Each structure stands twice: as C-alpha cells, then as structure tokens.
Image 1 (spheres, rainbow, N blue to C red):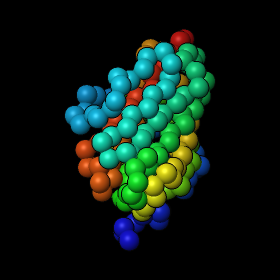
Image 2 (cartoon, rainbow, N blue to C red; image 1 turned 180 degrees about the vertical axis):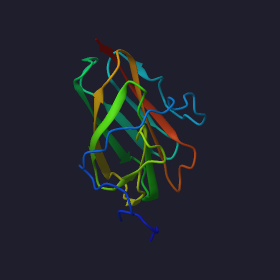
Image 3 (cartoon, rainbow, N blue to C red; image 1 turned 120 degrees about the horizontal axis):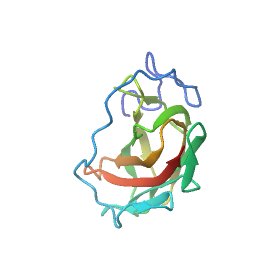
Length: 174
C-alpha cells in the first residue's frame, strides 16, 4: 500500500470542493523536460493524447477551442493502462496557465497544491491500475484573461518514472 493514497490530508479539499480564491503568483514554469508524447500538443482542437513506452496513455480534452473571459472551461483527463500488466503508484499533475483560476475538480483521488493559487494540482497517487483499466478526472476553471491557454497534464507511475506529458490548447477572447 502507498501511504496517503486515496486519503485526504489536512488542509486538502475533498474532490468536487470549490477552491478558495487564489493569491496572485508568478506563472507556472513551462518547458518541463521528460515528455514522451507520441505527437506534439494540438493547438485549436483543445485535446491531445500521449502514450509512453510502458503503455500508460494520458489524454486531456476541453471540448472546444475558444472561450470568453468570465466563462468556465472544463477539462476531461483520462489515464488508461494499455499494457498487459498492472501499474502502480500512478501520479497525475495538472498545471493551469496564468489565464485560468481553478474552480473545482473531481476524480478518484484527492488533490493538493504546493502553490497558494492552485495552478499546480497534484492528485494523490492511484494505488493500482490493471491492464486495460482507466480512470477519469474533471477540472473546471474560470477564464480570467484573454490569450492562448495551454493546460498541461503529466503522469508518472512505478513503471513509467519519466513523465508522460500532454497539453490541451485553446484560445480565450475578451
């Protein structure tokens, strides 16, 4: 068993809980190394899928490509084990761009953030994902600024220590 997996910690809001108003912070770092995406992130489609060498597939979709300031954007994130073996300690990290403010999330595990503005969302580890099994998360954020929106999802696991990275890219208008 993985300590803390599927267990909320002190100060961690439960899944689907609204997130407190953010405290201004600098934008999240971009260009993290370790991408093993099978294709470059898609701009304009709002979705993308990446599979690593161990068969762990990550997809992120926002169901649209243009959003207005003040409106919500909803992301659907899926992790699927396409290998023939179970995988363990699957960790999902979501990085929101400066144009977005996290409103709520849902999924099979709790979340935490090491930033006051919740731009980096760390989901608690998934203990095990059997061959062919998948899990889904939903993230809802409010668009606060116009411009290109690139929301990044990263997943690692015991068998896949190098992060699989995928982005959903969209455009926010005033």
